[in-house]
Amino acid sequence: MLSGISGKTHLLLLVIVLPVTIIASYVGLHNSALKAVEHTALQSARVMAMTMNAARIHYNKNVAKKLSTIPNIHIGADYEDKAQAIPNPATFTIEVAEMVSQQQPNIRVRMYSEHPFPNRQAEGGPQTDFEYSALETFRQQKASGQQPKAVFKSFHIGGKLEFDYIEPLVMQEACIQCHNKLDNSPKKDWKIGDIRGGLSIRHIMVDNSAFDQLEGIAMLSIAFIASFSTIMLIWNFRQSRKQLQSSTQNFLKIANSDPLTGLLNRRGFEQAIQHSWREHRINKQHMSIIYCDLDNFKTLNDQHGHATGDMQLINAAGLISTTLRQGIDFAARIGGDEFVIVLSNTNQSGAKKVAKRLLEGGKTVEGDHPLEWSLGIACAKVTSGISATTLISWADKAMYQAKSVATGNYQVYQES
Ligand SMILES: Nc1nc2c(ncn2[C@@H]2O[C@H](COP(=O)(O)OP(=O)(O)OP(=O)(O)O)[C@@H](O)[C@H]2O)c(=O)[nH]1
Image (cartoon, rainbow, N blue to C red; front, side, top):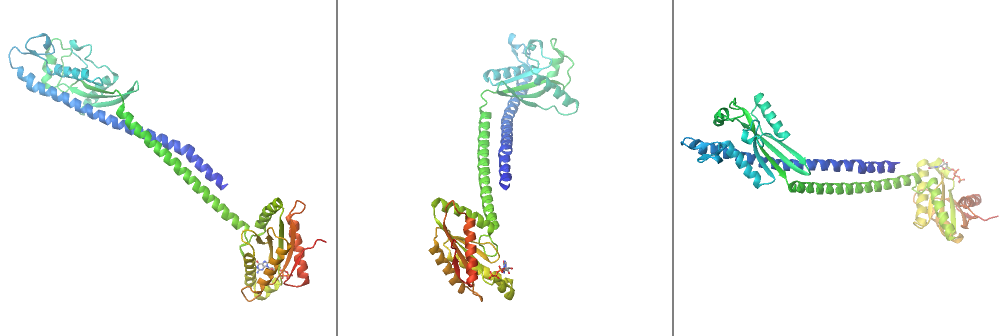
């Protein structure tokens, strides 16, 4: 029963808890790996956006603005077609972004507007759902009085990780004049602070190597955790089984022992004699039984008290134990003052020697009262024609014969 519960608990741990732990660890580590890669991508997108903005501001302030005061210098999106012309800051930034994108196939930088000029109609507007939704978010943030903030999102596209970062582009004082005055401007009612578009930076992880590395570490960690947990569970299971075996053995020892003398009790004796009987029958050996009954034990109890009687029983058991061969013979207290001794592979003459030693030993036991007992010996070659119960009953009869003759002697059972 105990073993069943313990086994089931461990099985439950192995079958449910371990896979759940492994899955939870994998999901946790996978998410951590993704977060780490996302963080890196976000940082690099921010740096890229800062660089683009710094280039635009610098160009605007130190190139476009200064050259605009010189006559015959044209500043506009159509600068390529004209002599003495330079790009306006927006065109400058757009073209720098295009150059970066061409050189880095895994990075795409673009400025987009909801109202692109006619020359940028094809590629200048929002192109993805995320670019549309980013403009919507910026507008909502502005409407609720917040400073529009960059948005960031990661996608899994065709087995590759993709990170999109979009910063709001806000209409500046320096740009509004052109936008509201130029003939070809698609919108002429811009106000400073309006959301005019976004700076979109897309980073595609071409080989996913950083992520794969982190996932590899995650998998290794999980494999380690799983192996460690399994080893711990098996170790724990074995320990529990050992403890259970040892408790079962202790329990059986207690259940089969006489608490007063430490010898086997009737229950333990029956198991031991059956086992020994089988072995003797296989080996066709002689077995001898000595049935012992204390003489006038009732009188001892009555005259000197139960504790003295108990001491006499303990002395008798001690004498039996020291007389027998350790691990070969065995004995039990099967009744109040009755003991049965089993002498393995022992014939009648051997049993007589043991009986004499027990009688002699009784005279010298420690204590005020010499140990006197009557012993009955029965001996047989163990075959299928006789049972252990019969041999014990013969020894019992012999003990009564001894008692009927005189106290403190032994008799050998003789088949009549
Ligand atoms: N002290 C003690 N006495 C016990 C124990 N178990 C049984 N007895 C007593 O042992 C006595 C056995 O009595 P009997 O079988 O008549 O034995 P006896 O007085 O030795 O008589 P004979 O065998 O004819 O010599 C009884 O008085 C029981 O009460 C025990 O554990 N301790």
